[in-house]
Image (cartoon, rainbow, N blue to C red; front, side, top):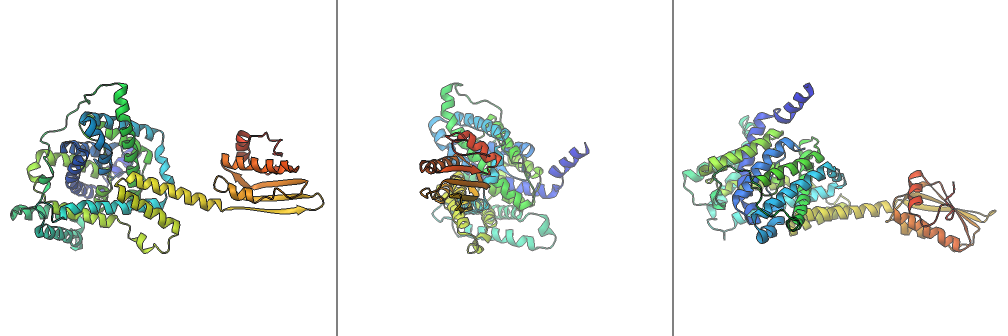
Length: 499
């Protein structure tokens, strides 16, 4: 019982002031993001806002990564565009429910453990690409061709950045109150007092005026519906978990604390199930808002809960005030996030890192930035990492031999890993045309990993046997022996696998 209360205190109430203040900042930053993502998906702004509220509140209780912010995201919005255009909102809500169910099952199956196969080069590429995308997303608000964007907006944005970076230098108070919160409140007061004609949150779209209500999507419950929504739900589930797992890894590093990736998978699934039942679109972890939360002092689940609850309170009950928040203030906050998110050390260490590391990182960045899809970038990075790793390990194989003149036999000694990437070298290391009576292949210090390795050993033995040579394979470890017993096309005695 004591341990339970200790865990509750650590995960909820060990940093109350920092979590409350950071939650307020995140809630303010979530509003224009949720509206923008709703517009991208082709749905009413309240769909994104309700989703952000539901997901943030639910994930604070059931997620595996404290202080991480989950809500409606751009990556998910891009996946659902065609579904909304072709079939409408009700099918989107159904796809959100199925997405949540798939994610929960993936968490139960512990697929979160697959994150250990994502290399650091991919993580850094993901972070840098996201920083670039976050910055690029602010450019329309600074484009002079955009309505009501001019010198006033530039001055407000510059003032916001000045507040964000200079306020923490003020003794005592600078460490107590998050500078992004001061930036947003301060610039809002200035804009309202001076009656500035600049874009604000109200320019993004209408805010909801009522609480979300529970309802089930009004669609036919049949196989045809399932076939329509299943491809989108699977894509949403994969993209959502991929972005959530990557964000969790980054927050782990920032806070130097561990997280439960499988619990996070299950939590994301539950959160999307709830969002779908309350009229919200599917969402996932948001690295931008998570960075704002952590950099503003958020450390526990309380910060995520505060962000969700305050978001709902502001958009439903304080909408007249929220509409007045200038976009320039939020742009300044997001620019700060993009600058803080980018891994500048990766540039400084570019010359010292291995070429393979740099190629993987740059490929992840380029793919993500050009496709605007984080899943594609990470997929390319992981595949390249695997290829480089396989190529590197494939070189850790050596074969040398000794000739016994008395018995006209040659002994081959194999050291290293035999798998698909090293089979060519393995096969070419043997002289199958040498006039010998016997060949002994000693694999005591080798390991056969896959069917390609077994097939290559079969080919080698058959070539030697065709030359009338007696072949013996000795020193197989138990795992390699099991693999060969199962997949070899000859029995053990026929290919010389004798103890």
